[in-house]
Image (tube, rainbow, N blue to C red; front, side, top):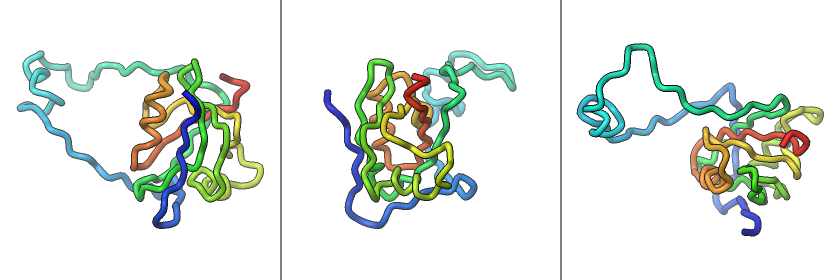
Length: 154
């Protein structure tokens, strides 16, 4: 398959989002007659108030961390990553000046949330267990919540 490159694109300089100052754009989705995601769900009965179906969750690792990067202006992440059989992406290279490099430079030198080659991307905006889904999520032009862990924990 080779490696995937999330390089920077021409245009405005990339910006790293400070998680304390995030603003989210809400997207509208087509809704069924009773406010569900599609009309077929409208007829399937009701869910007791306050109880929602549980979403499958992935195993959490003690050394994982999440970075928040805004790709809404179309700039690339600036990483080369290879899909792994584990459904993760191994970061092979970080391109100087890319969004991930800018994230790294915005952190303290001894910070534990600096991205380095060899680390694994394990989740992006709720997608996990599929390298192809992670790649697709990284290509979205929106705020990305990228969960990463050191290679020792994979």
